[in-house]
Length: 467
Image (cartoon, rainbow, N blue to C red; front, side, top):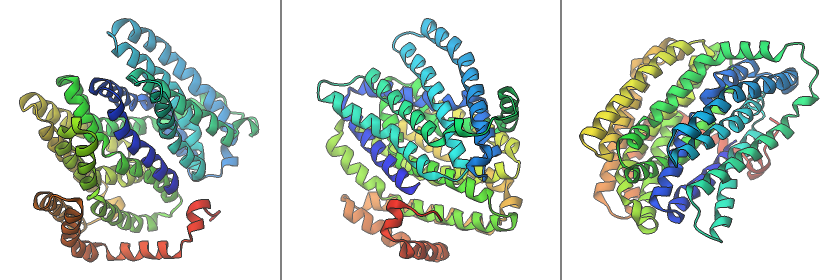
Protein backbone atom coordinates (compact mmCIF):
# COMPACT_ATOMS: atom_id res chain seq x y z
CA UNK A 1 0.00 0.00 0.00
CA UNK A 2 2.93 2.32 0.72
CA UNK A 3 4.36 1.62 -2.73
CA UNK A 4 1.03 2.23 -4.45
CA UNK A 5 0.48 5.41 -2.48
CA UNK A 6 3.98 6.65 -3.31
CA UNK A 7 3.35 5.97 -7.00
CA UNK A 8 -0.03 7.71 -6.88
CA UNK A 9 1.56 10.64 -5.06
CA UNK A 10 4.27 10.84 -7.73
CA UNK A 11 1.75 10.79 -10.59
CA UNK A 12 -0.56 13.30 -9.01
CA UNK A 13 2.26 15.59 -7.91
CA UNK A 14 3.47 15.66 -11.50
CA UNK A 15 -0.09 16.41 -12.61
CA UNK A 16 -0.43 19.23 -10.08
CA UNK A 17 2.45 21.05 -11.74
CA UNK A 18 2.20 19.69 -15.29
CA UNK A 19 -1.42 20.61 -16.02
CA UNK A 20 -1.20 24.30 -15.03
CA UNK A 21 1.91 24.57 -17.18
CA UNK A 22 0.16 23.05 -20.23
CA UNK A 23 -3.25 24.77 -20.09
CA UNK A 24 -4.57 28.28 -19.67
CA UNK A 25 -5.28 29.54 -16.14
CA UNK A 26 -9.05 29.52 -16.84
CA UNK A 27 -8.96 25.94 -18.20
CA UNK A 28 -7.05 24.88 -15.10
CA UNK A 29 -9.74 26.52 -13.00
CA UNK A 30 -12.54 24.61 -14.76
CA UNK A 31 -10.57 21.34 -14.47
CA UNK A 32 -10.12 21.87 -10.75
CA UNK A 33 -13.82 22.76 -10.49
CA UNK A 34 -14.66 19.34 -11.97
CA UNK A 35 -12.35 17.60 -9.48
CA UNK A 36 -13.82 19.59 -6.60
CA UNK A 37 -17.43 18.57 -7.20
CA UNK A 38 -16.54 15.09 -8.45
CA UNK A 39 -15.16 14.55 -4.96
CA UNK A 40 -18.75 14.41 -3.69
CA UNK A 41 -19.80 11.67 -6.14
CA UNK A 42 -19.45 9.11 -3.35
CA UNK A 43 -22.50 10.59 -1.64
CA UNK A 44 -24.67 9.12 -4.40
CA UNK A 45 -24.32 5.53 -3.19
CA UNK A 46 -26.12 6.74 -0.04
CA UNK A 47 -23.91 4.75 2.33
CA UNK A 48 -24.16 1.42 0.52
CA UNK A 49 -20.40 1.05 -0.05
CA UNK A 50 -19.54 2.07 3.52
CA UNK A 51 -22.10 -0.35 4.93
CA UNK A 52 -20.61 -3.10 2.77
CA UNK A 53 -17.14 -2.30 4.14
CA UNK A 54 -18.38 -2.57 7.73
CA UNK A 55 -20.12 -5.85 6.81
CA UNK A 56 -16.99 -7.32 5.20
CA UNK A 57 -14.14 -5.76 7.25
CA UNK A 58 -11.70 -8.27 8.69
CA UNK A 59 -13.23 -11.30 6.88
CA UNK A 60 -11.52 -13.39 4.19
CA UNK A 61 -12.73 -12.68 0.66
CA UNK A 62 -14.11 -16.19 0.20
CA UNK A 63 -16.56 -15.66 3.06
CA UNK A 64 -18.38 -12.82 1.30
CA UNK A 65 -17.53 -13.24 -2.40
CA UNK A 66 -21.06 -14.56 -3.00
CA UNK A 67 -22.45 -11.18 -1.91
CA UNK A 68 -20.52 -9.17 -4.49
CA UNK A 69 -22.76 -9.84 -7.52
CA UNK A 70 -25.97 -8.85 -5.65
CA UNK A 71 -24.10 -5.81 -4.33
CA UNK A 72 -23.06 -4.70 -7.81
CA UNK A 73 -26.58 -5.27 -9.19
CA UNK A 74 -28.17 -3.18 -6.46
CA UNK A 75 -25.64 -0.38 -6.82
CA UNK A 76 -25.94 -0.24 -10.62
CA UNK A 77 -29.74 0.08 -10.43
CA UNK A 78 -29.49 2.69 -7.71
CA UNK A 79 -26.95 4.76 -9.63
CA UNK A 80 -28.94 4.73 -12.87
CA UNK A 81 -32.09 5.78 -11.01
CA UNK A 82 -30.25 8.80 -9.63
CA UNK A 83 -27.84 9.69 -12.42
CA UNK A 84 -30.11 9.61 -15.50
CA UNK A 85 -32.57 12.29 -14.30
CA UNK A 86 -29.71 14.31 -12.79
CA UNK A 87 -27.90 14.34 -16.14
CA UNK A 88 -31.02 15.57 -17.96
CA UNK A 89 -31.54 18.37 -15.42
CA UNK A 90 -27.89 19.43 -15.58
CA UNK A 91 -27.83 19.40 -19.39
CA UNK A 92 -30.77 21.79 -19.72
CA UNK A 93 -30.50 24.04 -16.67
CA UNK A 94 -26.79 24.81 -16.34
CA UNK A 95 -25.00 27.19 -18.71
CA UNK A 96 -21.95 26.17 -20.71
CA UNK A 97 -19.37 25.03 -19.70
CA UNK A 98 -20.90 24.10 -16.33
CA UNK A 99 -23.37 21.69 -18.01
CA UNK A 100 -20.44 19.76 -19.52
CA UNK A 101 -18.78 19.54 -16.12
CA UNK A 102 -22.06 18.45 -14.50
CA UNK A 103 -22.71 15.63 -16.98
CA UNK A 104 -19.11 14.42 -16.63
CA UNK A 105 -19.53 14.28 -12.86
CA UNK A 106 -22.66 12.13 -13.27
CA UNK A 107 -20.77 9.66 -15.50
CA UNK A 108 -17.84 9.63 -13.11
CA UNK A 109 -20.13 8.88 -10.14
CA UNK A 110 -21.37 5.62 -11.70
CA UNK A 111 -17.85 4.39 -12.55
CA UNK A 112 -16.29 5.45 -9.26
CA UNK A 113 -19.00 4.05 -6.98
CA UNK A 114 -18.94 0.65 -8.69
CA UNK A 115 -15.15 0.56 -8.37
CA UNK A 116 -15.40 1.61 -4.73
CA UNK A 117 -17.53 -1.42 -3.78
CA UNK A 118 -14.98 -3.79 -5.34
CA UNK A 119 -12.12 -1.92 -3.70
CA UNK A 120 -13.84 -2.08 -0.31
CA UNK A 121 -14.22 -5.82 -0.74
CA UNK A 122 -10.47 -6.19 -1.16
CA UNK A 123 -9.81 -3.66 1.58
CA UNK A 124 -12.11 -5.47 4.01
CA UNK A 125 -10.28 -8.72 3.28
CA UNK A 126 -6.96 -6.91 3.85
CA UNK A 127 -5.73 -7.57 0.31
CA UNK A 128 -4.00 -4.25 -0.19
CA UNK A 129 -1.80 -4.89 -3.22
CA UNK A 130 -4.63 -4.56 -5.80
CA UNK A 131 -6.03 -1.65 -3.78
CA UNK A 132 -2.64 0.02 -4.11
CA UNK A 133 -2.60 -0.54 -7.89
CA UNK A 134 -6.12 0.89 -8.15
CA UNK A 135 -4.99 3.90 -6.12
CA UNK A 136 -2.18 4.70 -8.54
CA UNK A 137 -3.95 3.97 -11.85
CA UNK A 138 -6.18 7.06 -12.36
CA UNK A 139 -3.32 9.49 -11.88
CA UNK A 140 -0.95 7.43 -14.02
CA UNK A 141 -3.45 7.13 -16.86
CA UNK A 142 -4.25 10.85 -16.77
CA UNK A 143 -0.55 11.71 -16.79
CA UNK A 144 0.22 9.47 -19.76
CA UNK A 145 -2.80 10.52 -21.83
CA UNK A 146 -2.26 14.22 -21.11
CA UNK A 147 1.37 13.99 -22.17
CA UNK A 148 0.48 12.16 -25.41
CA UNK A 149 -2.25 14.68 -26.23
CA UNK A 150 0.18 17.55 -25.62
CA UNK A 151 2.38 16.20 -28.40
CA UNK A 152 -0.31 17.21 -30.89
CA UNK A 153 -1.82 20.28 -29.22
CA UNK A 154 -2.75 22.09 -26.00
CA UNK A 155 -5.36 20.16 -24.00
CA UNK A 156 -8.45 21.90 -22.66
CA UNK A 157 -10.35 21.00 -19.51
CA UNK A 158 -12.70 18.83 -21.62
CA UNK A 159 -9.88 16.52 -22.74
CA UNK A 160 -8.56 16.31 -19.18
CA UNK A 161 -11.96 15.20 -17.92
CA UNK A 162 -12.22 12.50 -20.62
CA UNK A 163 -8.74 11.19 -19.77
CA UNK A 164 -9.68 11.03 -16.08
CA UNK A 165 -12.83 9.04 -16.84
CA UNK A 166 -10.80 6.60 -18.96
CA UNK A 167 -8.42 6.04 -16.04
CA UNK A 168 -11.25 5.28 -13.63
CA UNK A 169 -12.89 2.94 -16.13
CA UNK A 170 -9.60 1.04 -16.24
CA UNK A 171 -9.64 0.79 -12.44
CA UNK A 172 -13.16 -0.69 -12.52
CA UNK A 173 -12.17 -3.35 -15.07
CA UNK A 174 -8.99 -4.23 -13.15
CA UNK A 175 -10.76 -4.60 -9.79
CA UNK A 176 -13.45 -6.78 -11.37
CA UNK A 177 -10.79 -9.15 -12.72
CA UNK A 178 -9.06 -9.33 -9.34
CA UNK A 179 -12.19 -9.84 -7.20
CA UNK A 180 -13.87 -12.25 -9.67
CA UNK A 181 -17.30 -11.88 -8.02
CA UNK A 182 -18.98 -14.42 -10.34
CA UNK A 183 -16.81 -17.22 -8.94
CA UNK A 184 -18.60 -17.07 -5.60
CA UNK A 185 -21.41 -19.37 -4.63
CA UNK A 186 -24.94 -18.22 -5.38
CA UNK A 187 -26.26 -15.94 -2.62
CA UNK A 188 -29.65 -16.65 -1.09
CA UNK A 189 -29.95 -12.97 -0.16
CA UNK A 190 -31.58 -10.73 -2.74
CA UNK A 191 -29.88 -7.62 -4.08
CA UNK A 192 -32.62 -5.47 -2.54
CA UNK A 193 -32.27 -7.05 0.91
CA UNK A 194 -28.47 -6.69 0.84
CA UNK A 195 -28.72 -3.12 -0.39
CA UNK A 196 -31.18 -2.12 2.31
CA UNK A 197 -29.03 -3.68 5.02
CA UNK A 198 -25.85 -1.94 3.84
CA UNK A 199 -27.52 1.46 3.42
CA UNK A 200 -29.03 1.31 6.91
CA UNK A 201 -25.59 0.45 8.25
CA UNK A 202 -23.62 2.92 6.17
CA UNK A 203 -25.70 6.06 5.73
CA UNK A 204 -24.27 7.82 8.82
CA UNK A 205 -20.80 6.99 7.54
CA UNK A 206 -21.32 8.35 4.03
CA UNK A 207 -22.81 11.51 5.47
CA UNK A 208 -19.84 11.84 7.80
CA UNK A 209 -17.45 11.16 4.91
CA UNK A 210 -19.29 13.68 2.79
CA UNK A 211 -19.11 16.12 5.65
CA UNK A 212 -15.38 15.46 5.95
CA UNK A 213 -14.94 16.20 2.24
CA UNK A 214 -17.08 19.31 2.51
CA UNK A 215 -15.19 20.61 5.54
CA UNK A 216 -11.90 19.84 3.81
CA UNK A 217 -13.01 21.68 0.67
CA UNK A 218 -15.39 24.30 2.11
CA UNK A 219 -12.85 27.01 1.42
CA UNK A 220 -12.60 26.02 -2.26
CA UNK A 221 -16.37 25.78 -2.65
CA UNK A 222 -16.74 29.30 -1.27
CA UNK A 223 -13.87 30.68 -3.37
CA UNK A 224 -15.34 29.06 -6.51
CA UNK A 225 -18.68 30.77 -5.93
CA UNK A 226 -17.61 34.10 -4.41
CA UNK A 227 -14.47 34.98 -6.38
CA UNK A 228 -13.52 34.98 -10.11
CA UNK A 229 -12.34 31.77 -11.81
CA UNK A 230 -8.78 33.19 -11.87
CA UNK A 231 -8.70 33.46 -8.07
CA UNK A 232 -10.22 29.99 -7.78
CA UNK A 233 -7.46 28.60 -10.04
CA UNK A 234 -4.81 30.17 -7.76
CA UNK A 235 -6.40 28.88 -4.55
CA UNK A 236 -7.08 25.48 -6.07
CA UNK A 237 -3.42 25.08 -6.96
CA UNK A 238 -2.52 26.03 -3.39
CA UNK A 239 -4.83 23.34 -2.02
CA UNK A 240 -3.66 20.78 -4.58
CA UNK A 241 -0.09 21.21 -3.32
CA UNK A 242 -1.35 19.31 -0.27
CA UNK A 243 -2.09 16.27 -2.45
CA UNK A 244 0.98 14.26 -1.40
CA UNK A 245 0.21 14.30 2.35
CA UNK A 246 -3.55 13.99 1.76
CA UNK A 247 -3.04 10.95 -0.51
CA UNK A 248 -0.85 9.39 2.16
CA UNK A 249 -3.56 10.06 4.75
CA UNK A 250 -6.20 8.35 2.61
CA UNK A 251 -3.97 5.31 2.09
CA UNK A 252 -3.08 4.99 5.76
CA UNK A 253 -6.74 5.29 6.76
CA UNK A 254 -7.62 2.32 4.51
CA UNK A 255 -4.98 0.17 6.18
CA UNK A 256 -5.57 1.34 9.74
CA UNK A 257 -9.32 0.73 9.77
CA UNK A 258 -9.15 -2.88 8.60
CA UNK A 259 -6.27 -3.77 10.92
CA UNK A 260 -7.62 -2.01 14.00
CA UNK A 261 -10.92 -3.83 13.40
CA UNK A 262 -9.01 -7.08 14.00
CA UNK A 263 -7.43 -5.83 17.27
CA UNK A 264 -9.08 -6.57 20.61
CA UNK A 265 -10.54 -3.65 22.54
CA UNK A 266 -7.76 -3.67 25.14
CA UNK A 267 -5.09 -3.00 22.53
CA UNK A 268 -6.83 -0.22 20.62
CA UNK A 269 -6.03 2.58 23.08
CA UNK A 270 -2.33 1.74 22.79
CA UNK A 271 -2.64 1.77 18.99
CA UNK A 272 -4.33 5.18 19.15
CA UNK A 273 -1.63 6.70 21.35
CA UNK A 274 1.22 5.47 19.14
CA UNK A 275 -0.60 6.44 15.94
CA UNK A 276 -1.26 9.99 17.19
CA UNK A 277 2.43 10.54 17.84
CA UNK A 278 3.42 8.84 14.57
CA UNK A 279 1.19 11.25 12.66
CA UNK A 280 2.65 14.23 14.51
CA UNK A 281 6.19 13.01 13.83
CA UNK A 282 5.54 12.43 10.12
CA UNK A 283 3.80 15.78 9.67
CA UNK A 284 6.56 17.69 11.42
CA UNK A 285 9.34 15.98 9.46
CA UNK A 286 7.59 16.61 6.12
CA UNK A 287 6.80 20.32 6.56
CA UNK A 288 9.96 21.36 4.64
CA UNK A 289 8.16 19.91 1.59
CA UNK A 290 6.86 23.47 1.17
CA UNK A 291 10.37 24.90 0.82
CA UNK A 292 10.90 22.83 -2.33
CA UNK A 293 7.43 23.74 -3.65
CA UNK A 294 8.18 27.42 -3.20
CA UNK A 295 11.26 27.27 -5.42
CA UNK A 296 9.58 25.05 -8.00
CA UNK A 297 6.53 27.26 -8.45
CA UNK A 298 8.59 30.44 -8.70
CA UNK A 299 10.76 28.96 -11.45
CA UNK A 300 8.34 26.80 -13.46
CA UNK A 301 4.86 28.20 -12.73
CA UNK A 302 5.36 31.95 -12.37
CA UNK A 303 1.67 32.57 -13.16
CA UNK A 304 0.77 30.88 -9.85
CA UNK A 305 3.14 32.62 -7.42
CA UNK A 306 0.07 34.18 -5.79
CA UNK A 307 -0.91 30.69 -4.59
CA UNK A 308 2.22 30.16 -2.46
CA UNK A 309 1.27 32.00 0.77
CA UNK A 310 -2.06 30.15 0.96
CA UNK A 311 -0.33 26.82 0.20
CA UNK A 312 2.18 27.36 3.01
CA UNK A 313 -0.65 27.98 5.48
CA UNK A 314 -2.82 25.06 4.31
CA UNK A 315 0.01 22.58 4.91
CA UNK A 316 -0.22 23.35 8.63
CA UNK A 317 -3.71 21.82 8.68
CA UNK A 318 -2.60 18.42 7.38
CA UNK A 319 -1.98 17.15 10.93
CA UNK A 320 -5.58 17.86 11.97
CA UNK A 321 -6.96 16.30 8.80
CA UNK A 322 -4.81 13.21 9.34
CA UNK A 323 -5.97 12.76 12.92
CA UNK A 324 -9.62 13.14 11.94
CA UNK A 325 -9.58 10.86 8.89
CA UNK A 326 -7.22 8.13 10.11
CA UNK A 327 -7.98 7.92 13.83
CA UNK A 328 -11.22 9.69 14.72
CA UNK A 329 -13.25 8.20 11.88
CA UNK A 330 -11.87 4.69 12.40
CA UNK A 331 -12.55 4.66 16.15
CA UNK A 332 -15.96 6.28 15.78
CA UNK A 333 -17.05 3.60 13.30
CA UNK A 334 -15.58 0.69 15.25
CA UNK A 335 -17.37 1.72 18.43
CA UNK A 336 -20.70 2.59 16.81
CA UNK A 337 -20.36 6.34 17.30
CA UNK A 338 -21.19 7.21 13.68
CA UNK A 339 -24.04 9.53 14.61
CA UNK A 340 -21.94 11.46 17.14
CA UNK A 341 -19.20 11.85 14.57
CA UNK A 342 -21.79 12.94 12.00
CA UNK A 343 -23.14 15.61 14.35
CA UNK A 344 -19.67 17.02 14.97
CA UNK A 345 -18.97 16.89 11.23
CA UNK A 346 -22.13 18.89 10.51
CA UNK A 347 -21.10 21.47 13.12
CA UNK A 348 -17.60 21.72 11.64
CA UNK A 349 -19.12 22.09 8.18
CA UNK A 350 -21.25 25.05 9.27
CA UNK A 351 -18.26 26.71 10.93
CA UNK A 352 -16.02 26.13 7.88
CA UNK A 353 -18.53 27.54 5.39
CA UNK A 354 -19.39 30.52 7.59
CA UNK A 355 -15.75 31.44 8.23
CA UNK A 356 -14.71 30.97 4.58
CA UNK A 357 -17.69 32.94 3.27
CA UNK A 358 -17.16 35.88 5.62
CA UNK A 359 -13.42 36.04 4.90
CA UNK A 360 -13.82 35.66 1.13
CA UNK A 361 -16.51 38.33 0.81
CA UNK A 362 -15.21 40.72 3.47
CA UNK A 363 -11.43 40.56 2.90
CA UNK A 364 -11.31 38.93 -0.57
CA UNK A 365 -8.00 37.43 0.53
CA UNK A 366 -6.89 33.88 -0.27
CA UNK A 367 -4.51 33.94 2.72
CA UNK A 368 -7.34 34.88 5.08
CA UNK A 369 -9.49 32.05 3.73
CA UNK A 370 -6.62 29.58 4.28
CA UNK A 371 -6.13 30.74 7.89
CA UNK A 372 -9.86 30.36 8.54
CA UNK A 373 -9.77 26.82 7.15
CA UNK A 374 -6.93 25.84 9.51
CA UNK A 375 -8.85 27.24 12.45
CA UNK A 376 -11.99 25.27 11.54
CA UNK A 377 -10.01 22.01 11.21
CA UNK A 378 -8.31 22.59 14.57
CA UNK A 379 -11.65 23.14 16.33
CA UNK A 380 -13.06 19.99 14.74
CA UNK A 381 -10.03 17.96 15.84
CA UNK A 382 -10.36 19.18 19.42
CA UNK A 383 -14.09 18.41 19.51
CA UNK A 384 -13.50 14.85 18.24
CA UNK A 385 -10.68 14.27 20.72
CA UNK A 386 -12.94 15.28 23.60
CA UNK A 387 -15.91 13.21 22.39
CA UNK A 388 -13.82 10.03 21.91
CA UNK A 389 -11.72 10.40 25.08
CA UNK A 390 -13.25 7.36 26.83
CA UNK A 391 -12.73 5.17 23.78
CA UNK A 392 -9.20 6.29 22.93
CA UNK A 393 -7.88 6.57 26.48
CA UNK A 394 -6.26 9.94 25.73
CA UNK A 395 -5.88 12.31 28.68
CA UNK A 396 -5.68 16.10 28.63
CA UNK A 397 -1.91 15.82 29.20
CA UNK A 398 -1.58 13.80 25.98
CA UNK A 399 -3.52 16.36 23.97
CA UNK A 400 -1.54 19.22 25.52
CA UNK A 401 1.70 17.50 24.55
CA UNK A 402 0.54 17.06 20.95
CA UNK A 403 -0.68 20.64 20.60
CA UNK A 404 2.56 21.99 22.11
CA UNK A 405 4.65 20.09 19.55
CA UNK A 406 2.34 21.32 16.78
CA UNK A 407 2.76 24.92 17.92
CA UNK A 408 6.55 24.63 18.18
CA UNK A 409 6.82 23.00 14.73
CA UNK A 410 4.60 25.70 13.21
CA UNK A 411 6.68 28.48 14.80
CA UNK A 412 9.90 26.83 13.60
CA UNK A 413 8.41 26.55 10.11
CA UNK A 414 7.61 30.28 10.00
CA UNK A 415 11.04 31.20 11.43
CA UNK A 416 12.76 29.10 8.74
CA UNK A 417 10.72 30.76 5.95
CA UNK A 418 11.37 34.28 7.26
CA UNK A 419 14.99 33.66 8.26
CA UNK A 420 16.44 32.23 5.06
CA UNK A 421 15.93 32.37 1.32
CA UNK A 422 17.33 29.04 0.12
CA UNK A 423 15.86 25.54 0.46
CA UNK A 424 18.94 24.11 2.16
CA UNK A 425 19.28 26.84 4.78
CA UNK A 426 15.55 26.86 5.53
CA UNK A 427 15.56 23.09 6.00
CA UNK A 428 18.65 23.23 8.23
CA UNK A 429 17.13 25.93 10.46
CA UNK A 430 13.80 24.11 10.71
CA UNK A 431 15.24 20.70 11.65
CA UNK A 432 17.68 22.28 14.10
CA UNK A 433 14.74 23.86 15.90
CA UNK A 434 12.40 20.86 15.96
CA UNK A 435 14.79 17.90 16.37
CA UNK A 436 15.07 17.99 20.15
CA UNK A 437 11.34 18.49 20.66
CA UNK A 438 10.46 15.55 18.40
CA UNK A 439 12.97 13.20 20.02
CA UNK A 440 11.69 14.07 23.49
CA UNK A 441 8.01 13.64 22.54
CA UNK A 442 8.10 10.80 20.01
CA UNK A 443 11.12 8.71 21.09
CA UNK A 444 9.14 5.42 21.37
CA UNK A 445 7.73 5.94 17.87
CA UNK A 446 11.17 6.75 16.48
CA UNK A 447 12.47 3.47 17.93
CA UNK A 448 9.56 1.52 16.46
CA UNK A 449 10.07 3.09 13.03
CA UNK A 450 13.80 2.39 13.16
CA UNK A 451 13.24 -1.26 14.08
CA UNK A 452 10.72 -1.74 11.27
CA UNK A 453 12.95 -0.11 8.66
CA UNK A 454 16.13 -1.86 9.81
CA UNK A 455 14.50 -5.30 9.62
CA UNK A 456 12.85 -4.78 6.24
CA UNK A 457 14.66 -6.03 3.17
CA UNK A 458 14.44 -3.95 -0.02
CA UNK A 459 12.70 -6.97 -1.59
CA UNK A 460 9.93 -6.64 1.01
CA UNK A 461 9.02 -3.23 -0.37
CA UNK A 462 9.18 -4.43 -3.96
CA UNK A 463 7.39 -7.76 -3.73
CA UNK A 464 5.79 -7.75 -0.29
CA UNK A 465 5.25 -10.81 1.91
CA UNK A 466 2.27 -12.94 2.74
CA UNK A 467 2.65 -11.96 6.39
